[in-house]
Amino acid sequence: MHTPVGRAASEKKKRTRKGLYGVNMADKDRKRKGLMDELPEQAKQQKGDSEADPDGNVEENGEKNILSGFKTTTVLKDSALEKAVFLHGKLEDQEAVVILQKTPIREDTVAEIFSGCKLKLEMKNDIYSIYHLQPPAHLNVIKTTVICPATEHHVKKYQVQEHFLVEETGEDYLSITLPYIKEQRFSLQWVFNILEKKAEADRIVYEDSDKDVGFVLLPDMKWDQKQIHDLYLIAIVHQRDLKSLRDLTASHLPLLQNICTKGKAAILKRYGLPSSKLRIYFHYQPSYYHLHIHFTALSFDVPGCGVVRAHLLSDVIQNLQSDSHYYRKRTLSFPLRADDGLFSKFKQAERLSTSWAVLGPLQRCIQAALVNSDKLAKRLATSSYSQAMHSLRDDFVLRPCETQQTS
Image (cartoon, rainbow, N blue to C red; front, side, top):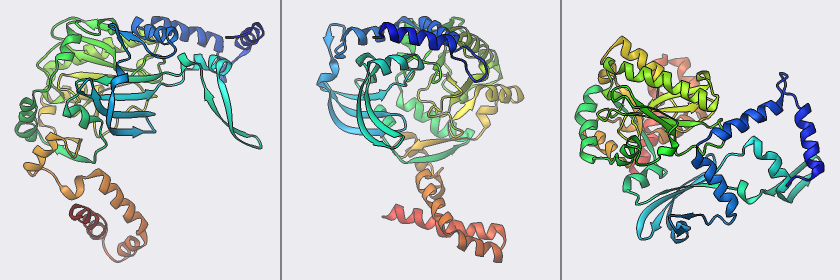
């Protein structure tokens, strides 16, 4: 809690702080406070629950701390980059996946962190000091996602796996991918619950209820809604016969344009983020087969926004305007995990290049080629570029990869 002297000093700083371009930081703070006031009640309630019970034993449906009975069997992934750990285990004798992730530090909480923290000096050398800082309990939150009962698909999704790059033609989709999707019968009940407002209705940011061009816009589960620099929302279409990019034709342009226009407007109105700071895209392959579009802050380097999986909505619209059946004919590349069922189908159909498809070994092969760059330089000096590159492939790609396959 601030002392009277601390509050006076803080107010003085707010009156005098100026950004590099003359922006009054007190105004910026007020705008941010206004943004937080507009966040869904669920997000504010989560904060209130933490403050009311600093021990974290929040009661939900009369149950006390359901995670106290979780038994970890496997650490699926430990990501320092994401500041998260992904666990597989048992919860009340059911398979479960639990994701623990540190939440980002919000600028508007820094003063409270500093004034209410406990510091322990770890090292000091001249002008450099390193401390362990323990913030107030309600500001030291770990976002926890529980998937229970979890299927084998959920476990594999979060497990560290070697990836393969697949090139899927339009014919491959019809003969391999589509039959696999139908065979698996992936559950979409949670999606239908959202569309029918049986679940997460209080999280909906915007809805167009039109059955042809309508959609629901709501925060992705990965976003804690505490700040906008990692903004992440999902637009889920009301049409239920659209699974992915492959189903889109020019007849769906009104739907896509409606999502683009109204989605941007809703985000600007609610969060103050203009369209020039948004990344709007599809995934292919998607994580679930009901058409949806991702809206993320451009400043947020979110997993899955790279070229091997993301397709910008603006590009999709232009491609369909040029060719109504663009995505039914186009060859699309995407990564698959080594133990993914769809990967097995492509492998059985002999639609993979085993030497060149493995991303991990290929990276190591490239590193080996760079280390031996002198050898490559000599070959370039005595042969054509194409001959040298074929020789390089034989020496540094095929042989290491083949060695790993037989080891």
